[in-house]
Image 1 (cartoon, rainbow, N blue to C red):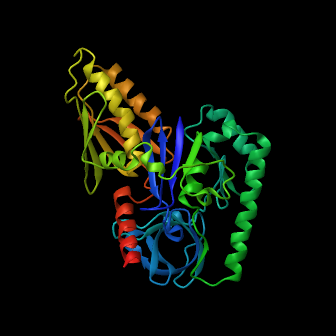
Image 2: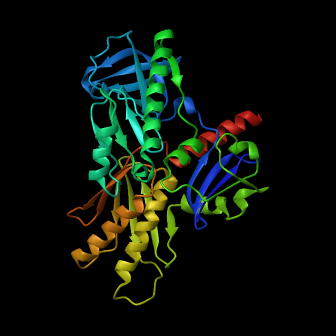
Image 3: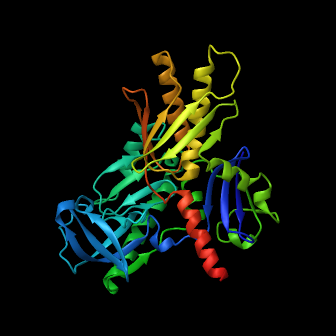
Length: 374
C-alpha cells in the first residue's frame, strides 16, 4: 500500500511517500520553486564561454544560468543582451550555476509537450513502446515535439488529447508573457514538490494523511487528519538510517555508500547472513538491488553510480541481478539507465540529476529556518 504523509505544522514542513510502511521519498515543502527544475524564464544573454561552447544567461538580479550551445533547440545563437526563453533543466548545485535549455518541456500526467521539438517519442518505461509510439505520432501537434509517458498507456485517448491541448495553450500564454515583459523575468515557477509527485508517480498513493487539511487544498484528493503523520511509521528514524553511510538489509547484509566528486560508489556486503551459502550471493544481491533503487530515489542521487555487488559465479546470476535493478528503478520518478557490468565486475548506471541531493536540500532548509527563527 502506498501512502503520502504531509507534515505542515511543527518542525520542518515536509512530505513523505511510503510503500508498505517503508520510506520511498522525502522532500521539504518550502522549496524555492523559482529556481527549481522546470522553472521558465525570459533570460538575457550574457557572457560567452567559447572554450566551453556555452554562455551565461541572466535570470534575475544576481542570478545566472549556464546555457550550452547544444541546448539551443535549433535556434540561432543569441548575442549578448538578447532576450530568450529558457528553462531550468538542472538546478544550481555545489556552487555551479543552474543548467539551462531552450528545448522547453511542459510535462503532464500522460504527456510531455516539447514546443520547440520536432519528434514524437515515448518513455523507456512503456510496456508496449511500439503501440505508444504510434499514438504519440498521431497526437503530436504539427511543428512541435511530444513524449508520451508510461502512464499514457492507462489513460483514455480523450484525456490525453485534452492534456496536450492544455499544454499548447499554456505555451502560448508563456510566449505572450515574454512578449509583454522585459528580460530578465520569471515566466513560470516550477510546480511545487507535492504537485510534481502526484503528477509523476506512476501508481498514485492510496491514502493521504496530513496534520493540516489546507495542505491538500486544490488537489481534489481526500485526506485523513492526524496530529503527527510522521510518527505513524517513524519517518524521521527511517530517514536518518537511509542517509547513513552504512545501510543494513533485512537479511543481515549491508550496503556502504560513498559519495565522491565524480560518482556514487556502493559496496554490497553479505554481513551477518548465516543462511545456506549455496544461494547466499544471489539472494543478497537481489535484495540489495531493490534497496539500492529505493535509496537512490530517497537520497536524490544523480550522475554516475558504480555498484560493487558480491561476486557471482555465473552470467545467469549477473543477468538476474541487473534485471532486478532495472525493474526496481521503473518505479522511480527520475529516469535511470542501467549499463551493465564493467570488466572489473562493477555495475555501471546513471540517474538523471533532477534535484539537489537530499542532504544538501535539508541543510538549506535548516539554515533558512534558523534565519527565520532569529
